[in-house]
Length: 154
Length: 293
Image (cartoon, rainbow over all chains, first blue to last red; front, side):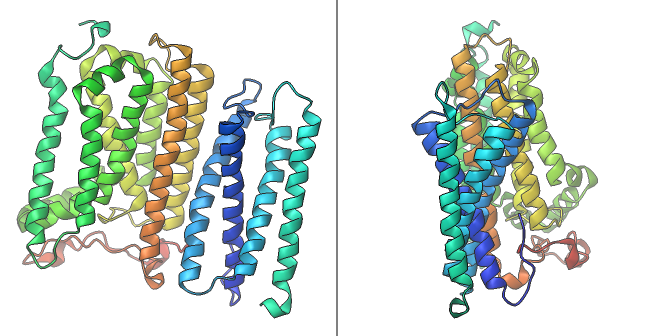
């Protein structure tokens, strides 16, 4: 989690990075509510998971909860001090969401094998859809980022 | 004294003891708060509200029927654990009981309390890391060993477990928030957030381990019951720790940006003739504490 150095332009950088925290937290929340609770595709615990997977899953879970709360309050603080840059914040939200989704799809599901997207189905389709959605979110975030960094928006 | 007979009629006095203590503590807090309200400094209604909330949560958890059910059902035990060890301590910490105590006591006695709060044993267990160890370490020890099964057979041990939940929970929440009662340690926001992070992670890992490996064992609980209890621990712990994070950031947001770099000094020094002697643990240098970005 990079923290912006205190430079004069820190309002845009802070707006961006705090929003990244929120984006990642929101995506994790969607994952938890939609796939764990509503669809029940993901398993709460999977005996195929190596121990390191369970440990890193716990760390990730704590990080996403804290990221959501911290991001929300840091953005509130920026807004109260009128240093919030909305364009940069939206870019951060989408890059955070896409980044988390891609991380979840590649590292959690494939490398650490914490759990799979769904069980007893052809996983390839699901994995492709998952990571493709991550790339779409990242694409939107990148477009917003370029738009925000154009001189007339600074 | 067989566990299957329940604890309802075994020792009524021992079962009622937590409620009686709770009632006494409440009368003390409310009368002290009432007295403070008539002074010029007053006493925040929010704090009183938090105290009553915490007491009600504890009252529900310690009510003899709840105790008896929790004895047989691990899910109810977990709800009880959540109330006693997490939600009630958070509410009580936010009610600033130490500040109220120091303002109410006569100056001489209050100074003894301040000395006690700054003594080495209290400073040792009120550090975030030791409070974390007491709290989460105690939970790992209780649930991942035969200890929990043992507490079901010994009422005294069972009461001790609840007291440990309450005290360890209170110490942990206080050490993380470092307020509204001034904390004995001047630790930066980042450090406390880091300890909170470790607590959240280890708590959720414990929930998964209990779910996957069916702990606590030797209690005769069904597989579904243990798994439901483990999920309660996982999501209930999330709720309590997110509330703690929200409280921490709310207090941070309410601090003016210029003062965020340091913790407030130890202010609850009673108005005394020579109050300069106990100025509290002074913050030696602002660089001890760190700023949040």
